[in-house]
Image (cartoon, rainbow, N blue to C red; front, side, top):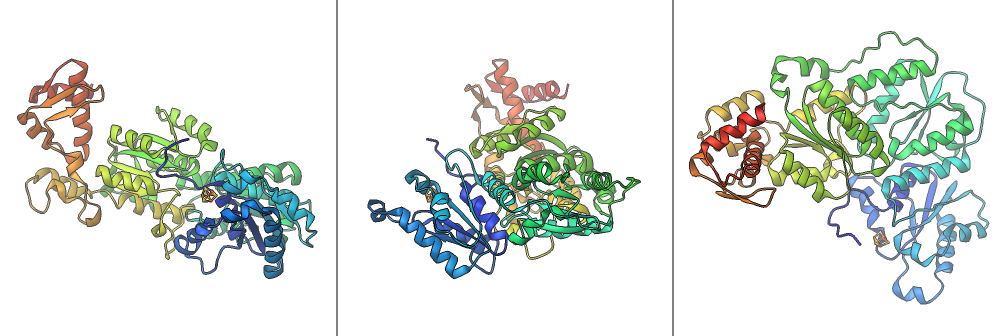
Length: 509
Ligand code: SF4
């Protein structure tokens, strides 16, 4: 048992629903208790789809458990087939149904339906949503994709986008445009937009573009083995990554790389003088592995932030995230426990958090600005406007999104100069972002007695407390913690102005 209030990922059957909903002419029959239809809302409300997901739930109740739940499942399959006439039927079980072990695959096979049936094994107690999507798509490809003649022109498949994917809709458009510019047409985009027929034709392409390793890597590896399709390893988020991606594509199709130029505004915007104040801003990055790794690179190399913490919630990506963190001189935080993430953020006191919907809440509580870079996300991150993360336009979107929550350069300067001003006071926060003004109660409590990490109590003398308030608010939390640690390490029980400056000198070394 594990006490959880927030989970970064849903159970694996939600991943299966994401694949089925992204595709066309596919239906999923899910053996699940009454109430599991809540998952529909993710698609009709958060993603704002104009139709229900193509899922039939058996919705068994307590009284059904005494009778024949297997018959219930078979009836549901027959009804779903008759009503929706899909070209492919997926069958699986949710967590509760997994316990009653009705074997959806065997039962559906026995019905002798005239369409292919893919039985999904979704270990709900060990794995999560991304695994569910990756596994479902892999099983579909395994069943339907066979070697076919290659297309005469150079084509590729886009692999990985699903329903409920963070910016998948617009990433597809952006990457298609980018590929067309280098003379590559898209054969099939899957699972999003693909029919079972399209899956049988995946082999027509010359290579695969793996857009999201979390949801498409297993299928790509399978196609590499069985269809001889190489796949791209660079996720094109950020200007440098997009350039590398283009070079990788050119390498695969046997064209010389040359100097690829990516028409993004990010490089100039971040080089322009107004961005000088961004240099060295301390940022903490958390989310799914792919988005975290690309974000860390953009933060460091393209905007000039100082990355002070990185981590991901999906263990499948733990290894590459750890390796990247090491290059940054950091230890990666691999956890699905948001309380651990919150503790790490509180400890590091970054000036900006790049994370998920959860980190937005954490940021709000701690009074630290945050921008969203990865699922899980809420409805506002399925925007009406064009907002990719990938390619040239994606880099433009990213620049605006990340800089927006920060206090602008001039404002930052004024806040520090006129601390007592009614308009530019510490508690005012970014003027263009009123709803997100930092919660100074937490960061800046004039607590005279603080329990430090080591458990000892340290007392802030009022002069020192006053002096602390002179430090700009966005680094004050860090200064407070450093000073307390310095004092506790030396057995100093009361923090005076001298202790504050000694600590400052100590950490500046
Ligand atoms: S079966 Fe799983 S997903 Fe459905 S309500 Fe129970 S725990 Fe939640």
